[in-house]
Image 1 (tube, rainbow, N blue to C red):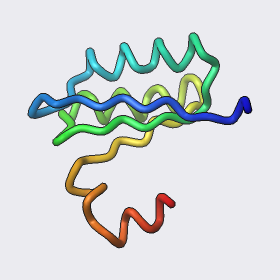
Image 2: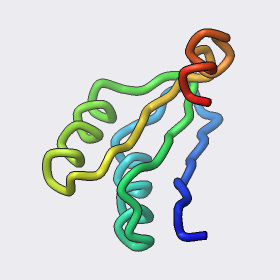
Image 3: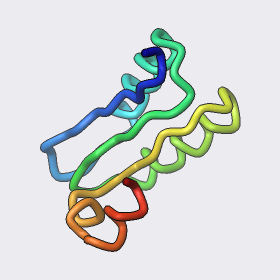
Length: 79
């Protein structure tokens, strides 16, 4: 089974750009085109980098907050 998606979860208050940079490196190394990053919140720089990564690499990082995951309607869309 070659179809899998990397997931990164952070327990800190806000995910920052350095966290996203490390996740991007892991995605490139494993040649993944989609990944999920879970955190309590994301800094503006982190979200900007996620967008720039998509433009550069044509790979998607889906930023998800814990609140979004616990929201039943959003969770159903991810299933």
